[in-house]
Image (cartoon, rainbow, N blue to C red):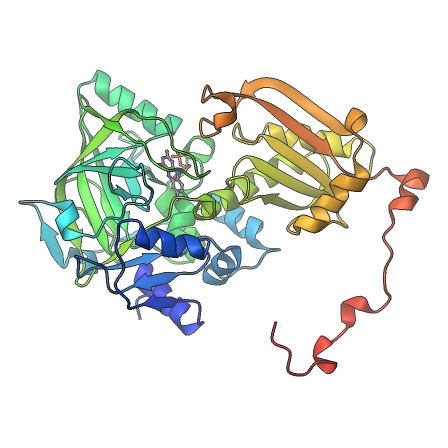
Length: 451
Ligand SMILES: Cc1cc2nc3c(=O)[nH]c(=O)nc-3n(C[C@H](O)[C@H](O)[C@H](O)COP(=O)(O)O)c2cc1C
């Protein structure tokens, strides 16, 4: 069994009963997205019968936190420390001569849409989009390799538009443009949980080679092969690689496209990728991410590392949640073991400074389950007084994906301190408990119960 990239993970998912197989014909235009959306992207589905194509599609891999933990060999309590350890202790990769990705190489008469079934997701989307492509670029000075997902609009047979919202990537492009030089890029499809997670760390914040973070996460060197036409390496066990250049002198109109919060983003000119070669393994599986909040969970898991790192300077932190409802970026919840009055407000300051996209943060005590919406609502209902517990910051830098500020990127931020007071004043917040509740064995009373 292959260990690295999609094939290895598919086998693991299949064995643990987590993979759905769809053999019924599915249209990549709208129908495929509708099926994925039905499961809120929390069920990995292999579509084996795609209308107009003999290539299978995998989707819904990355929307469930527990599947992520299972596939990465971790659990909820340990996950932040495992990810942090990989970021701060990157490990070397292994370059090999050949790999399954090189089984087929096309350099002439490239026609992306004819070779692969590229879905269209929403009614007003401008074209079909490659939504799960992990783009790899290399820093020409340090040689560090930076990966990230960027959506790719199909413009023609061998041409894609690329949407880049990243200071590091944009700056590199700008520098090359000034020198009238093109940028070499490769797009990888058919990767696994480790490779995706490593791609989501901020290049700007950590400045670390993401292939090496991936090697640390998977606890073995990531196996790479050289690209066919450009000076980049790609995973040997991937499914599909598009190689090409971003020319310094060409942009094309991109969008509209139904984005992560369910709105259409604005139409604008964006750089393009001219595809020079396609490598793919025999019987390749095309990978998709339905553009929705759940699919950004990998990004949220990494933002939780950032949030945790920033707030633990201010209080004893129990857990953090960068919620799916908030697009895995706008909302943060922090639970703390409150030791001093002021801990809650300190955590608000740390959280709002952790990432410009974080717009609302709620701080609660450690008796609240921050992954349980009812528990959270209870804390807001009973432990908050607006005049005392709200912090409002006016007109700060925010996310361009939030339409409530007319896409100008300037937004108000709110912190809510929903912690109870310490000492005598906190006694009335003690929760009523049933002695022995934690230890109750429900199967003793209902032996045939299936939850
Ligand atoms: C499913 C998914 C889709 C994404 N789409 C885009 C995109 O179209 N453009 C973009 O700039 N970032 C997108 N992102 C976020 C980036 O991949 C992420 O912020 C990046 O890897 C961080 O690296 P950077 O610091 O080099 O930007 C997406 C993330 C996910 C999980």
